[in-house]
Image 1 (cartoon, rainbow, N blue to C red):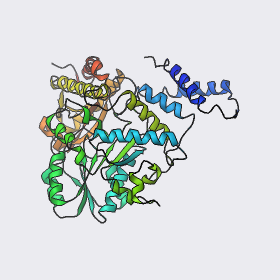
Image 2 (image 1 turned 60 degrees about the vertical axis):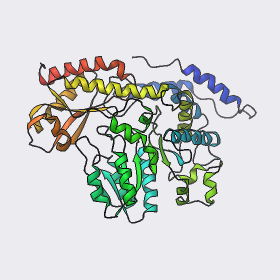
Image 3 (image 1 turned 180 degrees about the vertical axis):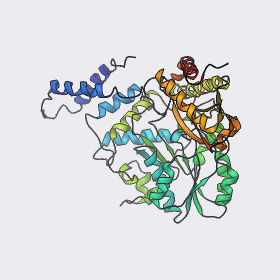
Image 4 (image 1 turned 30 degrees about the vertical axis):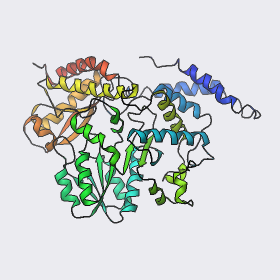
Length: 453
């Protein structure tokens, strides 16, 4: 596979435009030793061979996808300036671009007014949202699904806030009845709804959670770090569609542009529906400061230094691919889900595999049929290795019996969990490449398990 190098010409042209904006300044800086740099860069390129092919459709394991070329180029262009979006005097243009980009993401969720910014990723974004929640509900706990991202437990420990894990149903979604049993005591200040779990892509039943909020008065934070952009997709199932239709009713939302948003790492985004939460951050300005056009991003962020280049890359991508239902970007998301559904259909037809349930977004998980749970785990690892030998890179996920039992992969449960195979079809190209992927997966299964019938 060849990498795109032709677009580097675009970077050179844009760099000349950037240089023109500072043409009045006297020349400064030493001339770089190009020969020495070339040697180092060749060494870097050689070292980078020791990677899985994250950029290729044959990599379908973890949530890794290449940034869009325009994001990569815009990010690189900004590095000649290296702005810092912690303060306006450190990133004047990039701070303005961040506010515009974040506002477009907020509009995707139906918010005209909001408070928010970019950050290093979903972990930091969720940390800020839970920190704000703790300040608004001091002494009260946080409730998350047992399938929520593991960092919520870590973050609650850092915040010294009690965490309650709510059991999930057989599809990995938070169980509303179990949630009500947790919140009716009044000890929970925030419920985290996951719209796209990282394990299997499960979408928590947000309408039911919002209904419980009406009764018990807790905050609702939506962790959509992985799944948030699917708000634009037009081919979701009933549960996911219902959840995304009401995501704008949440108190706060997290989404990661460096996942489905085609951005380089790290680029997360935290959004608050009510701008008044800006009061919680330490600052010297009155509240009106937070709703003015002179928003100082550094005063509404727990992070200090933040790469302005991340904002520039996101802004450029949104100019090229607006967040519009039915648009080119939305179609990319729909192709990811179509690829996942194609894979699921193929797995259903192979007697050696037991797909757990239809994918809600673009993650598929399946167990290997076997006499026992422990043997199923061993065989899954064999398929995983055999697929990698054929350049198809999957992931492994250890899931509880409650999420697997309905698919009946084993006769004897000698363990309460099974390590399953998992695929994230989060590149639009996966739709086109899926026939070749399933063919190679079939060859891997033949080698690891024996021929199917």
